[in-house]
Image 1 (cartoon, helix red, strand yellow):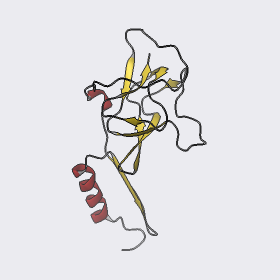
Image 2 (tube, one colour):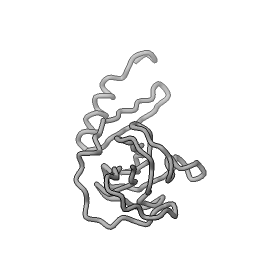
Image 3 (cartoon, one colour):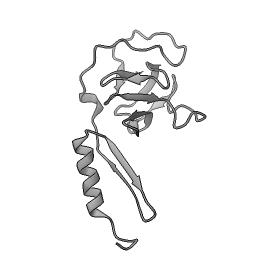
Image 4 (cartoon, one colour):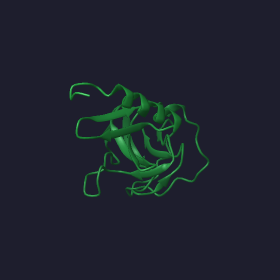
Length: 144
């Protein structure tokens, strides 16, 4: 395979693994190429899980407004608020989030999955702590 040829067979294999393992993203890299295969996920269609929310990351008062929008985890994994331990968090209480903005990373099966927001709004509460295990459908953040 020349350096300018796309490894279509490898892309198809990754897409099949993505589908079989119910993953949202796979990335591989070699000397000749780097491939990232990502499945679009709609986070608003997931059913809530009956789990108690964890303590908030920021010491913000609990917001009891109606009409708050929730960003929920699409998978089981480990929540990371930033790209690395010394980096700034993707979102903080008071930040304005736009649809498509990365709100966190969820590590699942040793894959780091960036979680984009499906909604616009102002962050009023972050419901999980950095490094915490999260479950499918668990509320990550609340926006108004």
